[in-house]
Length: 312
Image 1: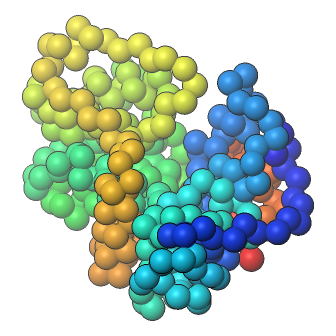
Image 2: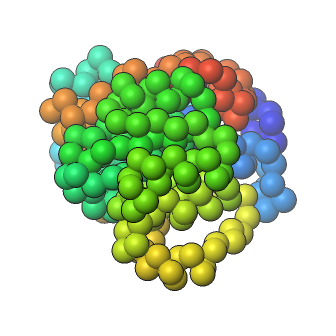
């Protein structure tokens, strides 16, 4: 892979070392965090390793390394990996999760589903709270659903009509177009009697939505940063942050044990009917079409939520 260019080549998949499993991938989700590397930043060296950037994969165990227990060839799994834009990926066995038969017919990019569960846990949402979610993509839509199920009144804020319609389907009580900074603040103030929101989840990853999110948090509330901020430093209005006295939670989990816990909770949530990600899988591309999928993720055409790469 070079900036803005993908080349598909045949190479022999690596044999798993002790404690590893090799997975024949069925598919891999495309994440907006892929867009920074796709643009060719100065701090990255190209070409990248085969399959690099793909971290939302799932498939079936093809072979196990020495000492691996609990997995067998043919087991359908999701996993934590970083080279999922390929036909095969080898990972440590403790980074893989066996999927139950109820999910056999469903694409299952467990990593972003697990992220949603972990962001929700960090948000500490309680019944009857006013909760604003800024940015209704894949992650934001799932968080609207989880927050509404928790008994909160959810205010969804996004740019596109299709996203606002999706938020209403997921349980948002109110929707606001993200077009004018002051108008949005006034609208949320009117909805909350001037108190603003106990929880605000920023799920965009850009400066303006972060600025807006801080304006919408009530005194003593919590600002949850779920958007992936990868384009440089941010400035914050520390006077406002101090005056409101709210907590700030960076909801990006880096501990693999916590990430795997999120994956397990996501599996349980889908099997139990708490969340259904299938309506959010809106576009499917072949492996050779990864470049088009990345471009579509950047351009965000109407109705676009999550693209999947078909790896097999």
